[in-house]
Image (cartoon, rainbow, N blue to C red):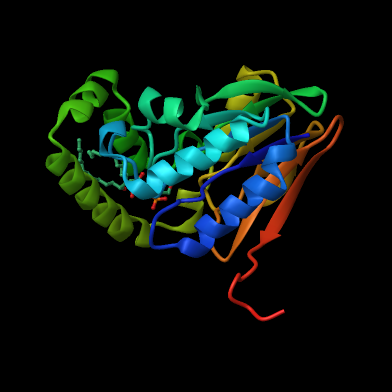
Length: 243
Ligand code: LP5
């Protein structure tokens, strides 16, 4: 069995999500052959050199899962594209290119974070092109920590203001881009996150697009067995609740 998750946006201020994720690792991921994390695992990541005790705890939890024999693959999202080899060594996971085609449930499946599919969101696509330029990435990685913190804070603020003004079709995937990438990679199934709109979309030609949800009031995961792909919601149990 293989598991896929996305958009946990882990951060210290959401102990409920962290608790649910740690429980998911114990109850599900340790029994899996592989765990794929399709981006925005952390709320924001400004560099492996700025790892916090909280993030270190998450890395150690992943490493403990890897020690049981589960292969862990991590794809960058639009919030944590600065995760590098330093974190991966601590977490015992491998970075996975966006996009990647992997064999799941007996077929080739295209995995993406999903942000690059939102081609109608022109201002975001422009920003993405700048931030993912290899030269800019090199410069960003070498900026002083405080400068990165300030820039990341500014960017989050601008993003919040800007997304509030965008219509929902702008912030969703562009159907033509979905068709294009699926044809380019010759797949019948695409799995992604980013849009926070969990669903299984049946597309023409017996194709499908499965969207992983973000973890907020509940979690989401896909379970791939030998011939099925199932999207599941995961209820958060409150450890303080009375039996
Ligand atoms: O994140 P989410 O889901 O809320 O919104 C996204 C798009 N926004 C982003 C920005 C991220 O939220 C913040 C990324 C922080 C990265 C930290 C590491 C970098 C450290 C160093 C910092 C330089 O991805 C949002 C989409 C939305 O998804 C839906 O798809 O709409 O895109 C925007 O809101 C972008 C705005 O439309 C344009 C903002 C222009 C800002 C220009 C500042 C340029 C600074 C360049 C610095 C080199």
